[in-house]
Length: 325
Image (cartoon, rainbow, N blue to C red):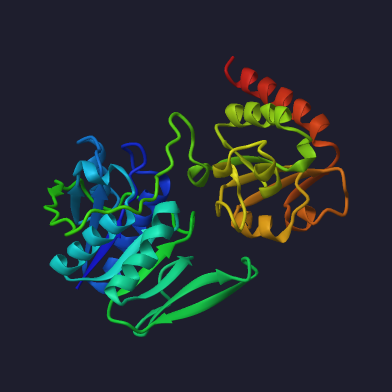
């Protein structure tokens, strides 16, 4: 019996959710009295490959074949199936990321394993294996039992804190047998050079239709730059073409859980709130005092986002300047 973690490679680095997953997997492996094995694909530096051991991996397997530079779901699933068979894996863990959401159900189907997505913590019970997840747009929790021998789960974003649990381990190369036939169906990994990934950001600055047009989002970009955060938007904004689809946060977009979520000109539709309800603190600005966003917000300002934002940006600049004196 062993536990396998598929760790996302984002532009040659392990993103925050991958580090959280490795720490989480190590804690679960300790409860199961088994090994934590991390599987990595694509090219990473020698220094980066030492990180999984520090976050809790007992072994690090690397498949750096050039074919894995693209998230080809059939190819990746074949690799995962091979490693599961060779290493006697019974528990398979993914992040609740674009890659994890694509690969986890496919791997579960191939392995005839029970599957639960977006779990929020360690299993409540190991016999029977029972995990907890949010349902009904995050309004309630459900305890789900997996009765199959092999088990596949994805970990919800920010559901576990990354922590140093071990020492660096030397990575091992995986010799991949490949597929008997050429693969034609492909899923592309998102590439955002020099930008904070929305799912990794501790601070998210988000805008809705109350921003009025695409040009006004430069205010959100400026605030995000000052605070070291990422920019997000609602689905109507993305549908209008004001912002790219990968910035859409919500039930049908990115599920995020930052430490601080700013909502400017966002009414608070249930589909949007379902994707950001895991945020530790929500601060909202909206002209409508009855906007649903205020029911979810920890802090709120009733006002025009386009009037509040410049004043907030100026105040942040003043405080940063005072701190640097």
